[in-house]
Amino acid sequence: MNEVSDIYNKRLLEYADKQEIFNINILNGQYTLDNVASCLFDIDTNSLQNENVTLIKHLRKFFEIDLTNIYICITMILPPLTSYVGKKGYSLLPRDAINYITNLVNQIVNRRRPHLERRNDFIQIMVDHELEVKTDQKLMKAKETTGETESQQQQWETLKKTLTDKEIVGQALIFMIAGYETTSVLMSFFFYNMATEPTIQEKVYEEILQELEDDEITYEKVSQLRYLDMVINETLRMYPPFIRFERVASNDYELGNYHIPKGSVISVPVYPIHHNPHF
Ligand code: HEM
Image: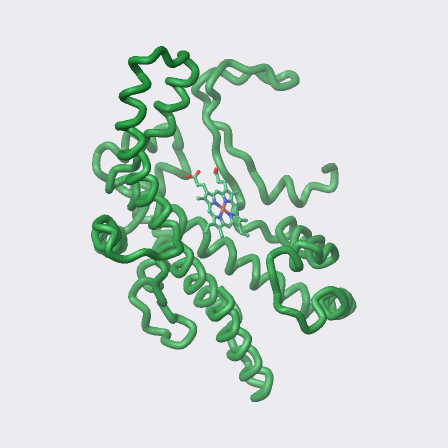
């Protein structure tokens, strides 16, 4: 992440030196993708230096709302039918992009499984877990016969779950989709707020100078920047990257005067809640 951040910093300084107008959202997308890809697969997408990255082109497709896509229309108008339409083979995500990412993840997992190479990333955690489970399985088999309690057995049943190849691709896909657009959109609105609120920008700058000085930037030090944290939270309130999400009621529930029957889909309108003066 430090290397990616150095390149990002360099690009920002270049624009500043040339006094050039540029699209910060594109730069933030490249920065976020390079970081997510490095944490997930330990690969250098290097999109900050090379705009023609196939992965970024495919990821962008996930965020282009295509109203001719029957799955998207159903999700928006009749959420309860979403799972039915999904079973019929329709998908929210474009096929070519899913195929590209599936191949990419499978190739990486297949290289890691024989344990010929080790990396410090999300895929490695899943592959290591698989190996640990196989080793522990033998140990537990022996213990099963020596009177384990029921809760110890249940705990083990949960821990021994490994992911199938399809689940690994699914996790990787969610990780990329969930991390890419959300973070880059937040960063872009943060910069927008800084540009339109110079007094606040100055306070953020002063805090960073005071707290970080010339030391190396670490997670712990960044966590101490309380004013920056407040500004980021306020940016998330003003411009939430997730404007709505859904939950399904697992039981009948009384919420004030409302009766929510089991199975109902509840939409949480994040944006209106964040902008309602009542809250
Ligand atoms: C400002 C940045 C972010 C925001 C605002 C954000 C927001 C959210 C929200 C609201 C959810 C819940 C969605 C739901 O359950 O309906 C969620 C879930 C999730 N986010 Fe984030 N997120 C951000 C960054 C990230 C990053 C950087 C990653 C990983 C690289 C990430 C990974 C995930 C994952 C794995 C889930 C769970 C998805 C699931 O339920 O299967 N998010 N995020």
